[in-house]
Length: 504
Image (tube, rainbow, N blue to C red):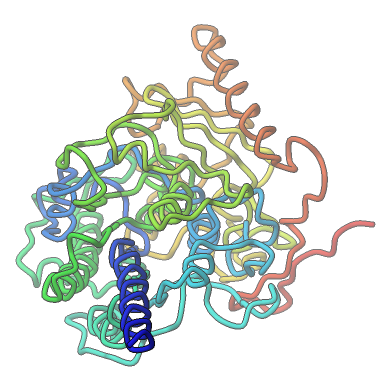
């Protein structure tokens, strides 16, 4: 009799252990990370835009948290995504600080750590990009296993045919029951180009478009903005379908849903600049089981590199010491562990549109009241050289994407009401910039150097450089500074264009 009894209790013990393991797996939250490509903070319904329709973002902001001071680490695709994945600012990531570069494998990503801990990890659309993975020692995209097989017929030219939501459902169907997942839904929208007139075709009224004062206010610009908003809406629709797929499986309440963008809109003085139009991004997070007092607007400052340690802590993992990003778990609990009163932003080389492929190195600190920018090489053209022959893209001011708005500003740059805006967008900049946001929310009047602002300028410069020293920025603490010389893996349109060799 003893043997059957022993076997019985042994079987019960095995079932109990398996049950504990499944229970443990079930309680670890899923992660749906949704990231658009080139969307500024202002362009969601929840953030006040009267034209764009973003019900998915608005829902997540309403049922979770809406971060009103979220900033990318760099206003350029690849570096921003590298910072998100590694939880580190771009000045710590060597080649990954440049676009069209690589993300060296020695920099651990949150996706790798989650996969090792038992998560199913995948992505669709635009994951880490653009660049090459192999030179950095990687054989696959660090965003996860690719799911890009499902396609759709786009509503307009310029919209990618990838069915992002359909690919997410395909991913979900292969996730074993009880296994938590981490999925990166990255659209190519609203990256340019756009179908001209798409906004009007969807019934949008140009008269209702909000034109920031950094742009001329005319029909060309208004319709360009409307066409951009059409692609913002496409991203939001894909996110809505993905959320519905999770909800249909009864897993939404144990899924953290994050909606954001890699950086700001592809317009002059926005993308590839440290001003708010280029660096301030939408960020909404929903997680009913982990967020207290849902529905809050969080005014604390956040960098997107804070997401990596957040995801790891949610999964019960300790973030590596190299991750300098700050977990948002205290914010979720509505019990701030420390002040979040500033964000830090950086740029190195964007599209290599200066002689010898050099970048425009700059760093910034953004607080509630001020934006301070330090330009390390102020003798260079910040938006790229006016000479297209020295630009990899073979266009003037090549750091700024081609667009109807850019063309208008270039063609009319000597005319009244356009000249100053064109100079702000394409002209040279001093070593230091300071903007008083209470009086100048769009950062159009540089007050650096004024006697009245001397103390504020010195204080912000000190805060920025203390942070750069603390996080070991080689431009401040010394060491290898090779961003101007790293290989450029983007498409080169100009014959003979090359990156200069580093002087010996």
